[in-house]
Image 1 (cartoon, rainbow, N blue to C red):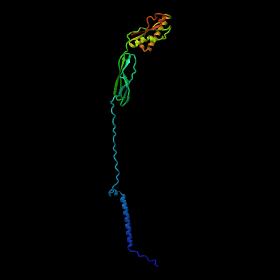
Image 2: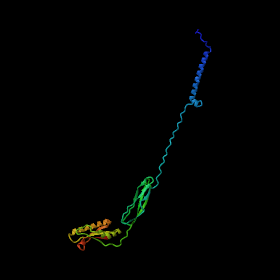
Image 3: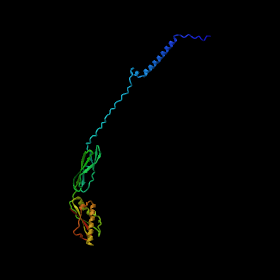
Length: 261
């Protein structure tokens, strides 16, 4: 067998082989081109390659904050009296004022100043003024009238009241209130009158010591009058011309209270 005989090679084979390689390369390049065109910006911009432009940044506009000025406070505090606007008080007695309360629309509770005086010992009408002012200077005020009523005047002047003391004693005697009742009632009803208090002693014993004892007895009665509501300025301790009392020794040891001006 002759192994040296080889098949005869066509003279056209080398040209065909080169052509096939060229076609394969062209197909590969075409595929690469198609992939590139699909992934590139050209395909998204109508085939025109445009640079990528960043999204526009909105311009920050600084808005000035408008702060409204507070409204001016032009309203005065609301002021209310505690209690009645007119009060009746008997002469010789005091009155505890109920005061007033004030409330402001801006400041809240406001202080109240009271002006005016009442003479409780003199009948008449007295006006108390209440004033409240807020921080803005707005002021409101109101008034109360205190009427000091005169008591019925006791026309009959009582006789002198006599209080008797034990021997060598300045201690208050028994049941002094009933003895002084008419004098005290007259003094309270007549504010212009005064009590005149005079002490006496008996003729028994040392005269100088007895005079001091009569003075102490007068002081005891003066304290009793003050305890009954008669003020000290309306009590006068007056030494009698003759300090030795009249009558028996028991009657002489006494204090007399009379009405004076």
